Length: 113
Image (cartoon, rainbow, N blue to C red; front, side):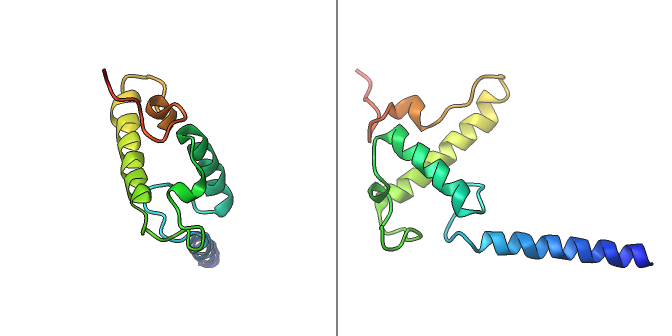
């Protein structure tokens, strides 16, 4: 019985710790991150792949806001990339795609000729 109680305490503390991490970020709907450090590194890379600054998608006074259409579009693009990687690239054992695959450092990908 003693070991069961200790196990329950450990499990509950783990759940509380995860809930604490989840509250660090606001309005994260697609990305799997739970800390500002993780998301800042990803966003920095994403901004470079698109050739934009953070304010292209975000309101600098409220990063969680969805007021900018570019943020909503980026969220849909991330869902698309996750779908392609999980359902196509992984199954074919091919290298994952990223924003760079199409954007090549530009806000908008080149249109086909």
